[in-house]
Length: 194
Image (cartoon, one colour):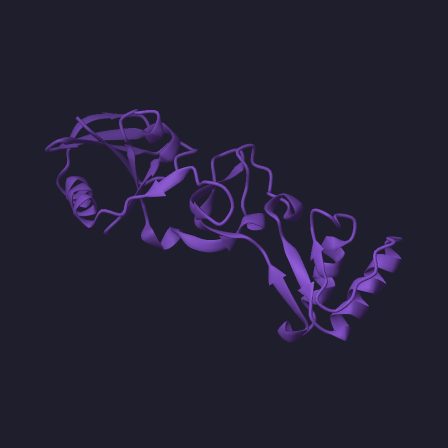
C-alpha cells in the first residue's frame, strides 16, 4: 500500500523535527466542519462552524416561518434570506431538519468544509484536518512526490531494531519508523529522520 503522509503544522512552525505520519489515502475525505470533533472530543456544532441556509422559495420560507412561530421566535423570513446557525441558534437545527425534506431548488446549504477524517482515540472522537475553509488545519499533507516515494520505500524496507509491548521500531537508511498499536494513534507509522 502506498501511504499518504501528514505532519503536525504547529511543531514544524516551532522548528521542531518533522514527524511524518503515514495514513491510508482513502481516509481523507471532504466533510462539513459541523461533522468534526474538537480536541476535547465534543462535536463541533453548527453555530461554531458557521453553517447557514438560504431560503430560495416560498415553500422554504413557509417552513422557516412555521418553525420560528412554533419556537416562539420573533424572526420572520423572506426569499433569499439567510438563516445563520450562530444568529438563529434557537431555530436553526429544526429549520434545517425540515428543509432537507424539500427539493434542493427550494433552499441552499452553506456549510464550511474541510478535508480530513474522524477517529476514535480510545476515549473520545477526534478529527485530523489537512485543509479547511475556516481557520488553519493542525496537520499539513505532504505535497512532495519524491519525499512520499522515499518515505514509502523506508516503510517497505525497514528492519526491526526494537520491539516492545504495543510498538515496533524499524530503521531504513536515514529514517526511523515506529509502528504503534496503542489507542489514540491514528497513523499506521510515524517516521523521523535519524
